[in-house]
Amino acid sequence: MRFDVLTLFPEIFSSYLGQSLLAKAIEGELVKVYPHDMRKWANDKHNRVDDRPFGGGAGMVIRAEPVVECVEAVRQEGSQPGRLIMLTPQGRRLDQPLVEELSLEPRLLLLCGRYEGFDQRVSDLLQPEEISIGDYVLNGGEVAAMAIIDAVIRLIPGVLGDETSSVDDSFSSGNRLLEFPHYTRPRVYRGLAAPDVLLSGDHAQIAAWRKQQSIERTTRRRADLLDRNAESKDE
Ligand code: 6GU
Image 1 (cartoon, rainbow, N blue to C red):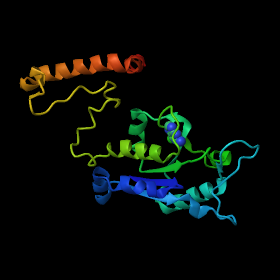
Image 2 (image 1 turned 180 degrees about the vertical axis):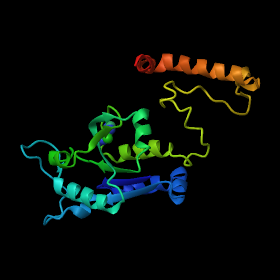
Image 3 (image 1 turned 90 degrees about the horizontal axis):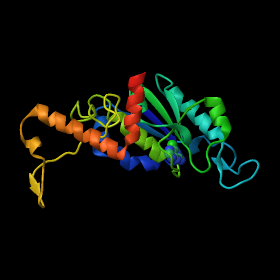
Image 4 (image 1 turned 90 degrees about the vertical axis):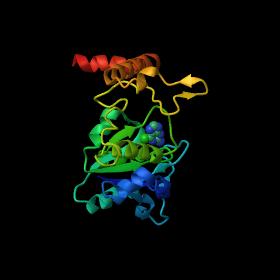
């Protein structure tokens, strides 16, 4: 799978890309991530990527030209145009079903904004899909782009060490419950014992205990997920 990240701060991605899980996937050619500096496409006489908003007001607006030209040039590079995503707090909220859908794509182009946002004509001309990672405001789309890459690549077969380890994930379409608690050695730590059932060797009992813990946790912390499960079963 190929990711092209269009940004004004490509260096933000370098330490993330060197991180072990991702580095291995990149080395094995399962995943390719290419940051592109949109500043290179700012071809007016001052090489400006941003400018003051028409109509006045605080902050700066990213000019349409470097963004549109950069997207067009980067699209030419690959064998397919890819799915174009703009990271913006105004977008559709990212969730695990959307992550699963994105993981089936051969190529994603992630457009990261800064400042007050893009000139509206970027959206008018390119018609990107707009995605947000939650109801809070980040200084730019870069952290959101990394969240998407991180969530998507762990679903690509061969990227996670254990092929099945994303199947039990909270929020995946097969499991809309929060994960159950995990324990490892020692059996007793500072007077706190791991539950006996986990050491019983009885796999049916263990599965039942985990399911019950998941339901309890979800009820206490995220009752909204149970409502959503009920809705999706009604469909
Ligand atoms: Cl995608 N961008 C910005 N700037 N803030 C956000 C976001 C994206 N998602 C949540 N907050």
